[in-house]
Image (tube, rainbow, N blue to C red; front, side, top):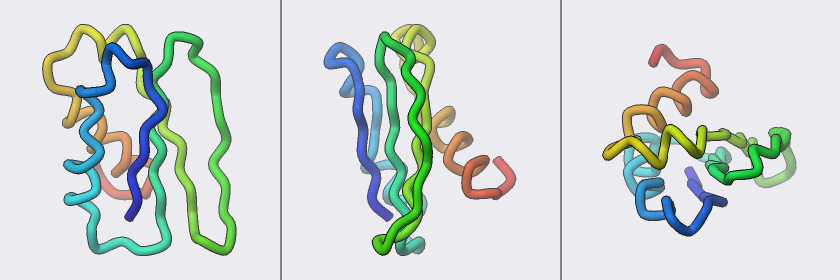
Length: 85
């Protein structure tokens, strides 16, 4: 699994892509893209020859306030993959 982030610089260190990648290392042909920006733009998921690309929007204001957002990230990924969070 590939895990990427497109985030505001001030919260970039909070988005732990390595943690999520380790939790789902058994999955191939799936990429997770975390978005956490002030503009709250939405992006669509897509599938191509490289596999499934899942875009997960995280709420900027909430991320900025929380000390550890890994539980939120993990729950959102599980939800999007159809697993029980």
